[in-house]
View 1: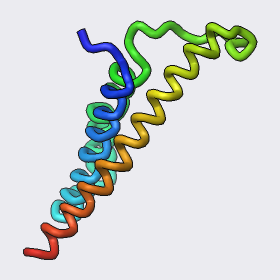
View 2 (view 1 turned 90 degrees about the horizontal axis):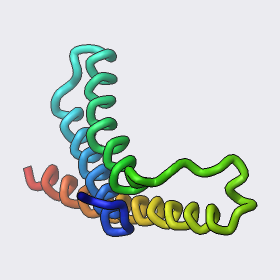
View 3 (view 1 turned 180 degrees about the vertical axis):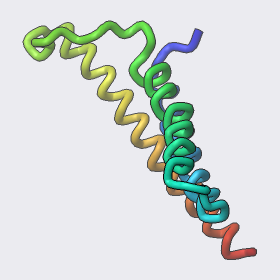
Length: 112
């Protein structure tokens, strides 16, 4: 079973960035039939490449909810810090892969 870690969070970020950058490139070539079709496609990609990976690979399936006053409890603050570091790893993975993938897509479009 995969457990959430900084590596899986960075991988989830890279996966999200690649999916959304590819979706944008695809949408430039293939216009949706309607606004509804565009929104449904976008929602499907968001569910498959953002919400589900964030839940399983960043937050963690076994992570229990934080208490209402989590900031008063040192153990809860430590748990929160771990999850926050995973979100930072997710963000850095997304930014890095988005920058690289965008450069690749621009180079491919210029060569055509």
